[in-house]
Amino acid sequence: MSYKADFRRFLDANPGRVHFAAHSHHFWPDVSFEAHSQAWLDAAAMADRKWDKIFGEIVPRAQKGVARMLGLPDPSTIAFAPNVHDLLMRIVSCLRRPSPGKPLRVLSTDAEFHSFARQAARFEEDGEMAVTRVSAEPFATFTERFVAAAAAGTWDLVYVSHVFFSSGYAVPDLARIVAAVPSKDTFVVVDGYHAFAAMPVDLSPIASRAFYVAGGYKYAMSGEGCCFVHAPPGYGTRPRDTGWFAAFGALEGESAADRVPYAPDGARFMGATFDATSLYRLDAVLAWLERVGLTPAKIHAHAHAMQAVFLREIAKGPLPLDASQLVVPMAETSRGQFLTFRTPRAAELHAKLLAANVVTDVRGDRLRFGFGVYHDEEDVIAGAARVRAALG
Image (cartoon, rainbow, N blue to C red; front, side, top):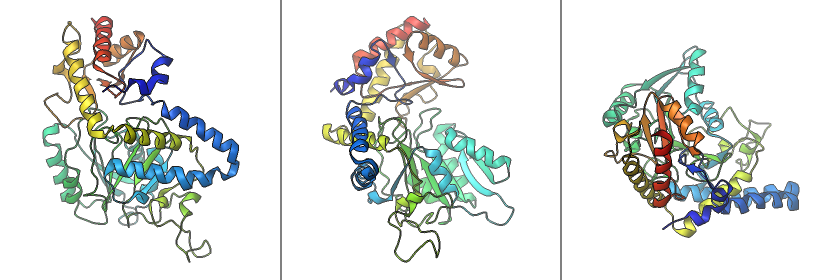
């Protein structure tokens, strides 16, 4: 079934564009336009009192939608923020050095997105963190190697992506990784941005133990500004990086005169005043997905089918791209929604494609093509023909 009719505003805004960057800036369905407009209308009608609706209706519905997508037992463990970096900083602010003058001991990978990788590198410069990075490649042995590293060390923080942004490889057994961490005091954080609303995810086995961060800019089709964290109960009860919204619903008897109050649920990771328009969009998109029966499993299967069509079509002409250059080969079923080609000409090819109004993205020597539910087979065939014309 085609869902192109639900994306008419984005598709009609630039009808000549071939958009193969659904993993980066996903198109937004039309329901997000109405939701965006409704946020403005509510602000006009309610002014200051709009927050009653935001926290009384929009946030609880969005929490339920996120929890439904991820198999979380309790939607109240979800807190929202404008970006993952804000949430990461609040999580890190909960950590204490193992002893005075000693850096935080961190286990991660060499394939994390900038929201973590850049900040961790900066902490390292000042001796605040000592980061051990497990190589993501070769993928066939990644889980074994990461589990061994997790079990062998005494870590303050373990941070790993569910799907690596630089390749599309999907880590197949999060529960095993989480279980390998020996100390219950260690914070475990999973970056799920390239998995949320893109592939089936069931966090119920690790919901009581691991943080999960993601957002709406990519496969949740909601644009910027609506990221979230699932905060497991008992972990990070009083973040030092805190905003006044984290006091909403604080336990009785804990007053400012005593000590800074915090909500007992995920709201303890809330910040301060933010633009809630993005949450209107996220709420509307999650409701639309449920209404039309478009589950992560269906989205995932569709994207993989479009990947196969694309590779078949570009193989029809001699190109500087072919399946042998895929970082994650098609034979590897544990992969996300995009294809990543490794080539020293990645930047050059990206520029040529963009000049032909074919949108992809490039990361160093890697050129990425992503596929969404607004693509059908006809679109991919036509798009691949444009790629052949631009690069052939």
